[in-house]
Image (tube, rainbow, N blue to C red; front, side):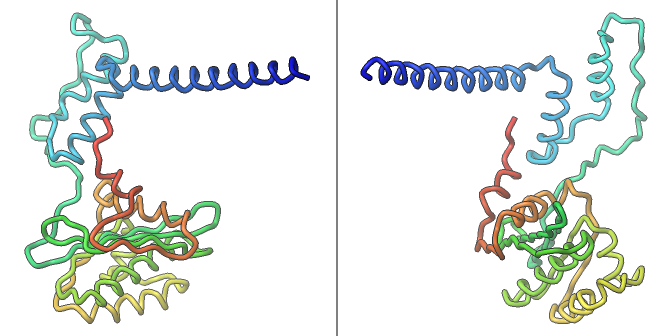
Length: 250
């Protein structure tokens, strides 16, 4: 019996050591990869993060050089890198704060395995969050999930007493519908009607379609919505998961 217990203790110790070794080895390997400056995809990822999170504008001419290097095309190779057009704009896609005394809303919706969720964030003209939220919307299509968050964000802004609001979302369909560019599908009629009624509560309102890169905080909140039971709100901050979208990892 005593020998059996000793054997079990030895096995437990070996298992702990094995798990520790695996975790340590994985962490060491990951750190080696992300700190290896010769990896072209690391250079691209860092350039992307510098652009979005630090406001830097790297020259697009560096991208062909990086990709060429990955194809074993070194500086001494006869293969020439295709030059980027000299007049190509270096403006990058990123979130920008609203005008003075305005509030910017970013909203998004998400569907995973037929389960819908959404989120939004209200930010002041200095970029600080006023309120953010994540919702579990039950079963809905992607357009409906985004429409629901559009409505929820306007309702929140109204309750906060916001007078001038700029609304951004990565759903061109929803922005075009509310702007009157196109007619809404019948499934969205009621929600769109609510959105238009809520829009009348503001002194000024602007609607703008943006790409997801400029909507990443709302996207993170929408993804978080799949993990909450009904809804979650944060005042003058965002959730930990959404705040990680603002942090430069590499």
